[in-house]
Image (cartoon, rainbow, N blue to C red):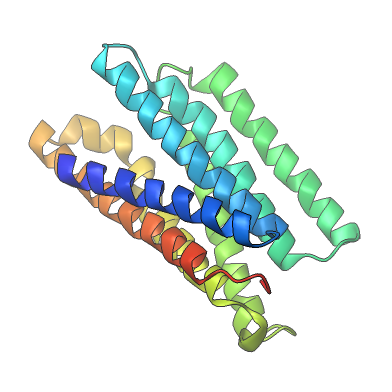
Length: 215
């Protein structure tokens, strides 16, 4: 499991490096800048979590913060891809802010920051799955058709759909699994989640690699 964790970190660092290389070469679009911020957020969260764990501090509060920022960054990427400027985009922004408020309220009143925020993770995962599916409809059936959807966003969307669909069930049944399974069996479940995350990070890396100034 440690090897998978290290592999994910290496992929994230490569993605960040590639993002900086691309940013020097081209003026990046808004969605790709958000994707770069998401990679930076993932790296900082991973490193901070590891340091806290190494020194024996509770790092679950990071999951609460990361869940909120992850949801906002990815959702605003989809907002740029799916909605033109106008009332629909404004309404979508209000919806995102409303869901973010629910995530914050969950951390304040339902699941304190020293515990797993399973309710928030389930909610945000479902929202991101819905957005990924909506992107597929736009890409294949919408007015833009597949030809105008660039390779970067096709592969990133595939990563989002697979990772958040798979990890949804991990968080949905996490408390039951923790109580029902032995530690070795739980490690197997978490390894499955790491594998999904590895695929997601690879999708981001490939998306950044294929990014061109026209996207």
